[in-house]
Amino acid sequence: MTNIPDILIESLPYIRRFSGKTFVIKYGGHAMVDEQLKEDFARDVTLMKFIGLNPVVVHGGGPQINQMLDRMGILPRFVRGMRLTDEATMDVVEMVLGGKLNKAIVSQINRHGGRAVGLSGKDGGLITARKMQIVLQEDANKPPEIIDPGLVGEVTRVTPDIVNTLTAQGFIPIIAPVGAGEGGETYNINADLVAARIAMALGAERLILMTDVDGVMDPSDKLITSIDAATIGQLVAAGCISGGMIPKIEYALEALRSGVGKVQIINGTKRHAILLELFTDSGVGTEVIL
Image (cartoon, rainbow, N blue to C red; front, side, top):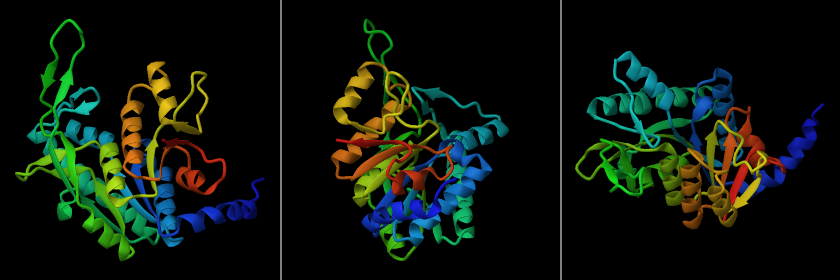
């Protein structure tokens, strides 16, 4: 049987060390679908705030967007994992991310005693973006193909004043990854990228990326609990780090090089994974360091 007093004592030095520090959490994957995991996440974030940490949540919502597109008869299209976003799709993205989904997360945290406030990157000039260009070259003997992804954006500037103001007043910011262009256009932006850039702008102690896998695995499929930039390069070359994990790692390294204390990749399908990673000696995921 788990010794609860021992766990609480183990967490004490971490609580003391992290008090007053900012933690940016990218919330996504199965943890946003399963009812029990949604409740666990709301409790965990509320607990973090009550014990003196400053959580800032950036959420995704791909499955929920797909469901709404399906209802409206719009076929989702992807290139290199990027959602091609025309104006009709952007309307759905903004409605789901900035509306229904964002407010559901806010409501869930507030029910557990937190003081969550929903934002999109358009609020308070938080995220300025520009149109992303995708260059695809499947054959080295052919010229690269430039693909227009529509209203898909990349972050050009983060102005975190509104987040700092809310955090200082005891609120928990919940941010939808939508940004505004210089001309007022609305852009759909990758949530991992938004979380990394916000963590950089806030000088966060930690960036936590929630996924549906345990973390980074070694060639024998065993979890790597801590990994540095040199080892990452070797594992990418060996094909051990591939697919959707590659951009996560790239964003993690960018955040670390810009002053974020540490990046942690955890499995959001495990109950209370955030608390176990932050407040126990062994942790449950992969920490990324330089």
